[in-house]
Length: 131
Image 1 (tube, rainbow, N blue to C red):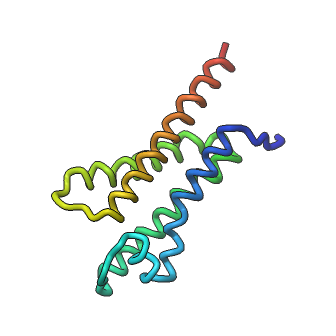
Image 2: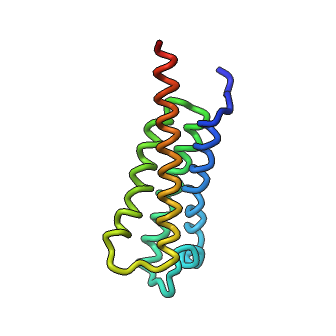
């Protein structure tokens, strides 16, 4: 089967790359501190941030693979949607969130909206194909 690069694939790759970008923090706690606007990070928090970066990398790669393998799309979208929606929800329930983390939450909301649109489009395409 030949790979067809369509709008679904493009959107999945875009959100996958966005979600995988924090994986760069695995090698540098300093990058994680800068990305999230954190002043000081002890070793334990640094370990947690690096682990979080690994998980984002896994989620992002799932979407990128889903661009090529349609069977991966819906599970990858679901896993990423949970991740993307949970941070803004947790931030909204927190008393004081700094501007850097508010920006991260806004990016997550936009990415979740894009994924929701892709999911709806995929579902419509599947229904049209089933007719």
